[in-house]
Length: 78
Image (cartoon, rainbow, N blue to C red; front, side):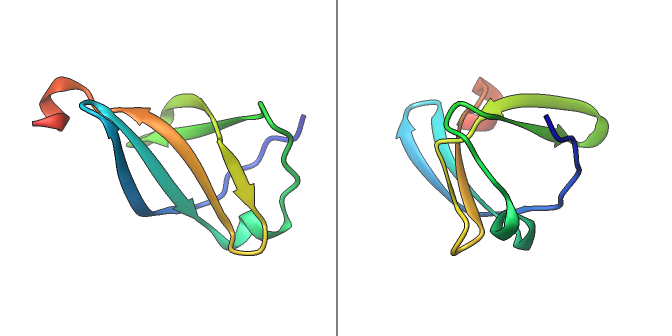
């Protein structure tokens, strides 16, 4: 398992259901990444010490994009 920090930006969001979203993240670092289905991404939330482990739906090395599902808590969803 390789551990590394890469900066990515959210380029799209899609509403899947009331509180569920599909986020598309983009980073040049994703272009040279190897990915296996089921592999986790660790996403920093606000700081490097607060994070969430999520499963990517796919990683497109041609575009440098990955998609992850997420839950929008009640306050964020309104």
